[in-house]
Length: 352
Ligand code: KG4
Ligand code: ZN
Image (cartoon, rainbow, N blue to C red):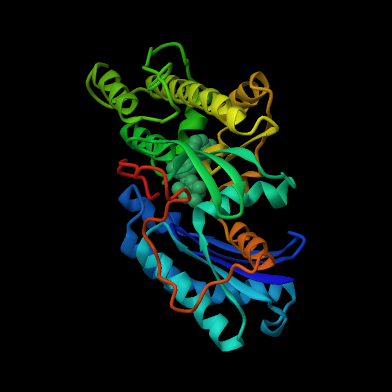
């Protein structure tokens, strides 16, 4: 089986080819970050235009790098949501066109399912498993029970974790994207200097909240002597913020692990995915959290935790094997929850 995957839901334009065993045959990815940096965040209109300008070339490159021809494809998988709708439309229309012209099945992929099923090809993880999905747009805890079968255990009630990193970085003058910049600054800083709140810690359930923490960082920065922040202050604020955020996430994950174990006593694995999973402080804390809960932590390679087309191609593989394909009139969806029975999440950055 050979599948082409296409990803355009945020600020990464990507195309990848994968085989039925989950071997990555190629991955062409173009980050638009430089185009968004002047604005301090992603501008949807710029993202859509950039996808349009680059996607055809990236698809050609992915096909050439994999050494396959369109006649070799068994299907094309394209992200159909959730995400910035202009970009999603560009990728989905491209996928539809390839499917129509070459008369192959289309798989309209939920981007979140891409993140959710990634450990299935990177680490051959079996169902069911507990998933912490933490990125710029998503912050959820899910029991992953099968292809298309998810139970949402918790979600953010305001910002996504990556969004909190990005906003705090902007506040501290560290630029965009904020996560890597905060992590770098935090390495030089004193995490004990500011006693920031651990949002939701100790509360029932396993929802997240980060806006209070963000405000606490702003107030602490404003309480410092006027003028530009000193490097040491920035580093200490970053370190104290990161410690609070990681602590809060670890508390939520510990509770989710209890819920997961009640539903699936034989479950053995905690997976962390999404861009924030690149954070090494988070990874090492979660390794302990998992251990205490009797679970093993699986963190896919960073390049496959952030947005990519390989995970979209893989969802294509899993779905095509089950005969789950879509018709050419399938619609792009800005919101598309993995667990349709879960109450709608309210956060500004929440797309599902
Ligand atoms: O998964 P991703 O590439 O795109 C979305 O679907 O959102 O995640 C991007 C997010 C950004 O908010 C970025 O600041 C965050 O992941 N991020 C990090 C790190 N690297 C990326 N956050 C914390 N620490 C990092 N090292
Ligand atoms: Zn994503």
